[in-house]
Length: 390
Image 1 (tube, rainbow, N blue to C red):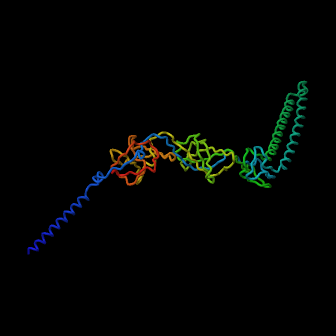
Image 2 (image 1 turned 180 degrees about the vertical axis):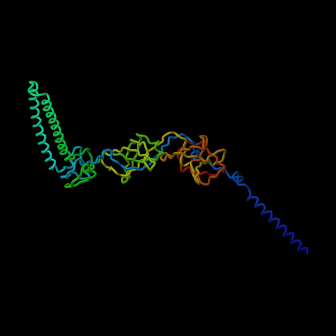
């Protein structure tokens, strides 16, 4: 009986000891996370890890599609209805202003010319006859041999014949003009882009004959969204990349900005001049225009200082010996300088972690080993990671 009593007491003691251990373990696990944070040594940063807001001129690059167009081009059209006798040029050939491009058959025009010349000579002969009659009647009317009415009749005949001579001269000039138009000449210097006719074809008035493109002066017509048009000004430098020539950027300049949007697109065309002295470029090529806009000083940080998570942008600020996650509103981004505009959320006194570190949490203890926050710049990616102080 005594043995059973002693065994029960021993079991009870063991149970109490086990319960006490379990309670102690639960108590240690239920300590608040803030206590654990305070107990952990602070993270250490060097001055190179910190930056502050500073005013910097940011340049944003706009990339817009466009196409190369000739500043000067012409489509030569027929000025008469006739048969094409000869075409002296082919596509790709270079021509100068005034060069003969094609000729029409002028047999019918030469017949008309001879007829108009004969008509004019006949009209002039009749004019001379009516003039002599008028002069004679003028003498007779002075001597009262004929009435004034008879003289007026002769004078009217003279004037009518003079008008007939002028009409004959005009008709002759018209045929001579058609003969001149039968020889087609280049209105501008350039390259033959298209030949629409062949020898022997009969074309009508105003039919297209030959297309000419001047490649010495080109321009790119590009389209910009309405939101970016205010940043595009005539005279601004631009870099043009041509499809098919990826390793040869061309420098140009904004010449004109259209005053209205294109129907159905809500975009505005602008034109960039493009020198082409070596005739490397061709009209119709696709292009991409790169424009740098901005340049006004704005508060900025290095791109490496800004984090994004779930659509929210934030930075890590070191304040009062701890890290603080601070949401910010972003603006323009300068890819070349690797700077980004901070529109709201920070002051110039805030010290921001610029180097990307992992496992940072809001409220972690932190300190700077030495130095102060530097100016907004690209942080050194090889900077030492934060380490716990011993």
